[in-house]
Length: 385
Image (cartoon, rainbow, N blue to C red; front, side, top):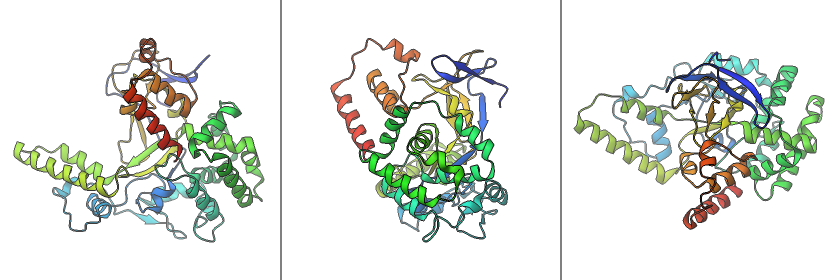
């Protein structure tokens, strides 16, 4: 664990992370790999290519743009800014999973890849689970049944260590877990959970070590752990290319020209794939998951290496013993009224926010009419996921 932080237990918040010493703006607070991570099911089905271990992009920026726009004539300028390295890509000898390097493949093998190798394909042991999940959870995705399968693989390989890590995430009541499962799977969640649970019971009938997670309460709790603690991961070779382009020293005329070109590419991407630009997945991070929310956070999460390695960076100077916070809301949600933010946090994370920003707005009007209308629309969209 980073020497810059310390984990403490708060009477109301539970475990949280404080700054062990003063931290400067833009300073790295924490760097962490997930103990389990996976690409979303529909994202993988749609041929978004990334490493099956760390989610590093496995196509060049130019190939990425051509595929997503259905236009093989696109040529990206400044090819030296396309820094995706595909020279070390390897494939599992028994299944179609791709890895950015031999070390990533070996890491998967150490985490019991053989448990699910080839088992998601037609006639595979877990194929029915995979298909049921895809029927339950359409894009935009927030989690994946593949994470449970990977967790079960880890339990097989390292039972005590994995169960201990999972237990760190269990801190809610059964009713709260039910609410979170409802939000994850939508209005038909009861029948969907039942179908998923029965399908998994059948697939794991001979695996007694998973029994506790396949009971009614255990299965709901497992879904809720993944739904609330998993951190979204998005990687994109084109986004990395755009970042590299932005760092070039160009004349004003050339800068304007390249900016217009990139804008035109994003316009075309919006027409063909909308918001689905990235290889997307999620991971469980033991330390990062203990960082609490604030509507005025002092830090943010980034992925500096175009893979699942997570970095927490200070947004401003942080004092010794000050709590490290991030926002569970995006920029648009943060700009909404206190009422809207609280509503979203309560529905998706089952807590009321008492951050400095929320407390300063406690007497504000609940909603503007326009915001209320838009927010309700957002909720309707989420319920159908």
